[in-house]
Length: 357
Image (cartoon, rainbow, N blue to C red):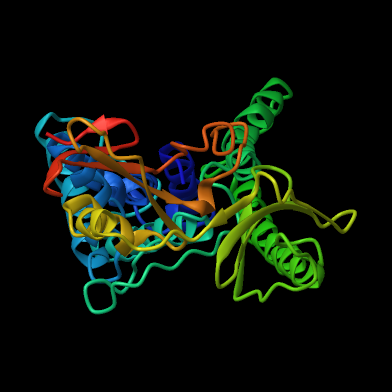
């Protein structure tokens, strides 16, 4: 999920009651909820390094205890700084470092849970199990979840202003009910979307509209990818022995829309060029992550012998308010290219248009 959603999740979790148990709970849980995304610092080494390490060890169960220690350590240093500066240290709850460590672990787990619910996925059991897991229940940025968290954070303040005008006593802790309601609503949204996702998959399996010869297609697997906001609309990818086909499912009216002319991607034959590209740094990283990889090569330059191999993941080959997959079919989000010379040596690698130096 996006960083703001993670940060707000930590703050809402703290407000649901943890902030009553230990001082600095809101600070620690807000920081911990976003801490795993520190792996974005790998981007200074280039786009492929960033792609390789994104949602790496910081997004694993093995990494959470260490990250919780780092977060609590940072809060402890802040606490000591306040004491040295003679800042007011009166807290509404006692300082309990052990509890704070446990709360940080909970917030860190919320990060993994949120990231699992989208279609990028995580590797929670790495390095023991490098498999990627993706719930594909919500889009990478989900406006409904964002709105629920935002309301939970600002509504108590707004109602507090009204109460102050009528002379009501200001409570020590505000917004617990709003926070709990928002968290329950988010879990309910995941459950609702899980039901709609299974409905989208079933509608696809029952459809006779796939393939150049509809009604005579062996479907190996169906992937259902979420659109933001609308829980009834799903992008499906049908995997068959010879091709992939895209479609759009509306579970509200039980329809499946697809086009044999533009939505079919035949599985290309392996060549010496694509094999060489798959052995590159980008190739190894991409194929390790991608659930539905499509690896294609361009025509060979008749003069230089240069050829470009493109790596795409068909899970992201669709258009939303935030991304362009179909409109930019040759370079959708999270795509990469490897350029090779006539001797099949890698001369250039790019990820999302950024060159790896």
